[in-house]
Length: 334
Image (cartoon, rainbow, N blue to C red):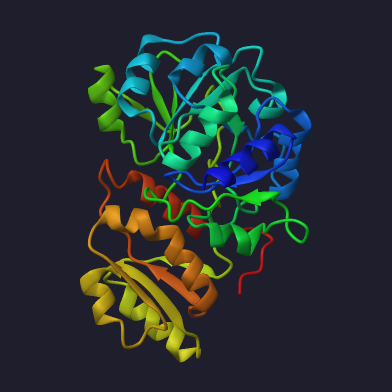
């Protein structure tokens, strides 16, 4: 693994693209100050250039390098949650260029906790504060990757694929993208839900946290209505409506797969093509993208999902389910 890290650093230093493991999802990384390298991320993902990227750093010591204003809340939160799945949005410094920030006056920063990429960042940083721009390592809008194989199946490695190297760090343990918290306004505001909840943040900073973007909020990753989507139709249904939905499909000679709480999953296991059962929202969060990849590849004509109850801790996975199931205009589904 030492040789893989050395290889990854050399590729990044030369302006290449490396798929990296984080605790959330795999990212497609490039030197965040190399314009050509960052633009190659957009090209590889087919991502709109106005969508800002998150800069991944080795530690909170890099904050002054990337941000010109560091509020006290940022210091408290990085001490509590970094390394970890929390991204903070701050006023950018001169090092954060338009090609990373989407032309905005803000920059999104995160320090991931996966030991392999954490070591990679320390080596790449070399004590200077440098960082890696790294959105999820998948084609824009598709299901995010939580294994190296997901990246191979989608973007692939050169010469036939789009990445220069895939750094394999096993399965991601959090399973959905980081919480994004805007600290540039008067009130801290969560712009993307994730594993670090509003309640957890409030306890650290001693003040309430608002949820959802407003007109003045910065644009951030993962905020499109339709996102993280499988090729097949994904439909969120209630437990009460599920029998009628499945009977309707059967009358039209169509099949289905199911993601649901364990008791419901067991009840429908004999009539579904594939079933994935979860005991709680946390298990669903960790496995959601993996299951969507599996069911999209091997499941039925439609994927049904029975969602968990909405709580502060389930907000992130419910957000991803909702976006994955959203209507996709001008797109034909299998």
